[in-house]
Amino acid sequence: MLFLFVACGAAPEAKTVASMEYDAQSRWICQPGAPLDACKTPLTTTEIAPDGTRTTRTPEAATSDVDCFYVYPTVDLELVPGNHDDFRDPRRERNTTLVQAGPFSEVCNVWAPLYRQVTIGTYLRSKERLEAGLAIAFGDVEAAFREYLKLAPPNHRIVVVGHSQGAEMVVRLVKKFFDGDPAMRARLLLAMPIGGDVEDDTFANVPPCTKPLQTGCFVAYRSYAAGDPIEMVDRWKPRPGHTIACVNPATVDGGTGTFSRSFFSASGELRRFMRNIEGVETPFVAFRDHYSGKCVTDASGFSYLAVSETSPGPIDIHRRFMKMGLHLVDMQIPSGDLVEMVRHREVASAP
Image (cartoon, helix red, strand yellow):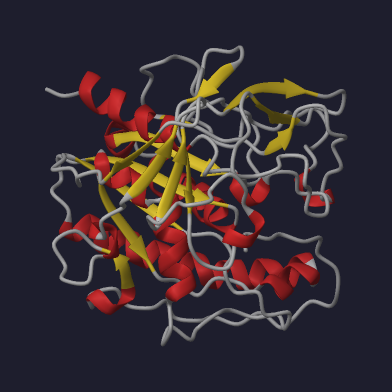
């Protein structure tokens, strides 16, 4: 449900649309201190080691001076182009947030707004139509981030994280609030636009992370199974002379790293596509040390995270969806390492 497609079609007439207001808790999936904060949901998890040993764990939410502002990916699969504006039943938004952002609650206070994202069908239209829809989506995300800045303590460090369409929103947030503002960059622990259109030089002053405890940098990658042929959606290809960003969460300074914890939902509509989870009764499942990854670059300048299986995990990494490789699980496979990146920097930068 985290899909992107090639754009084609006719451009719409430009319109100015007011952003949503975020002073009501009903506009948020996760908001620290709010009674309906979904990120306080217990993430009771069956953890499976490479030898098959199983343990059950319920992590505790953090009390932290770090805030994680998260933007979920495309969950509206409507083929008609437009912006999703019906939030009467936000189960997809909530469930996706729990799987992708829930684990971060161990190390930071998670803020996750609803927003009028573009539907999957919008990606089938022209570049102009898509941009008009994304502008509406970002208007909401920007308004939510401004509300966050009003409510959060000014000494809190910030992580901005999003996947797919959410990554596009994170790129725009970094450009709008951090890239040109030294004071805000000083608060930026990490930016994580995962599975988005990010090149090494996307930002003027926020570089890719290349050192283990570096802050004020970004983590970005697209993931594919190692050894599989790489077919790209056209809009993912790098501009001439540029390189797609790839930062390996397991080893930011290069080489191959084993992903410590891959986190998945063990219930819902995707369970039928999973393997090796027979007998799991908890709502979530984590596989420890089952996958590894390495950033590689092809002749065109397309860099990606090449994922290998070290032990049989819950997904067949060679089962591909169109040209998108492992896009659907970009965040889930290295979930534990993404969380640990925040934890280590939080500890290292504490006063």
